[in-house]
Length: 379
Ligand SMILES: Nc1ncnc2c1ncn2[C@@H]1O[C@H](COP(=O)(O)OP(=O)(O)O)[C@@H](O)[C@H]1O
Ligand SMILES: [Mg+2]
Image (cartoon, rainbow, N blue to C red):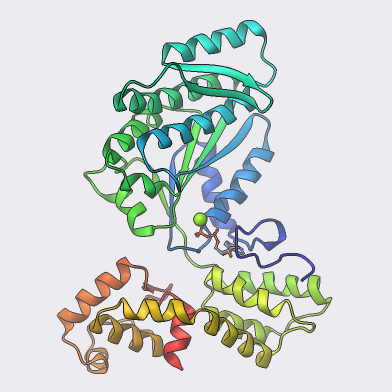
């Protein structure tokens, strides 16, 4: 492939397909220094969208900067604090790169008051807890204090900051999760120069943090739910990618087959296309079907694991939906087809939806989430 047009990691540059509306909506929130959570099943493109918007926004005007932290390896409250502090250090290094000695002293003094030390190294500022942290309460207070300090410093210097916090749901696994969430909330509900964008790969856990009334982040953020990329947008994207790769048009019918097989799931579109774009010639229907078969074979152990983890009722529902997506799961036709009582189907669907094994498409049809699993069951 000439360029990595279909990466399996973050989609950047010409690999990024459309999402104009979502980009604009996210930009609008960030411009208002509002806080947002991006919710979607795994591999729908949350990180790619957030990264794209962060780059656009930071390049759009002077004095706007985006910082990214990931909570993936956060295994206790100290690590969470250290990650946030590292993000704040990174932001401050950009906001005040050429500080006069007097101003630096002032910043150091204000940080000292809230328990932090400031030092300067080759990468910029480095902030740490001054002395040793005595207890968890100090660490927790440090989290809100340092975020508040960043907001103040940004205000003084006329900067706006986007703070992307990926894998945010990992915090909910920690024993002091409520207290940590409460400290972050405490700080960011008062900020006016920071926009936090929260995302994570576990949809269910992340959603619970933001929609459960008993959790500190309830009603705290705008919720943006990402859907799959529209077929019309993928058509343009794949046409362009074909010209870049082979200098030739790809048949619209072939694109239709690619999008039908992958059901426009961004991860699987890229997986199939990266296979197809490695070939010498523009794909046709036959090579596309063969490429998809290779991917199903590659995914066979994942598929087997997914199936063995399902209850018998869930298996029946998934198998029937793979053959024919259905709007009305309580209809006599569907119940006859699965051979189950409507209450059993309801329980099965509830869990399948929670686990992102099924979803409702734009037309309201219940479908199988993973297009490889769907094709496997159809075969
Ligand atoms: N807008 C997009 N255009 C093209 N490919 C995309 C787009 N968004 C995501 N992808 C692709 O989909 C897959 C999952 O993207 P990622 O951003 O990691 O999703 P998430 O963060 O939701 O798990 C990757 O292969 C990525 O390249
Ligand atoms: Mg991601």
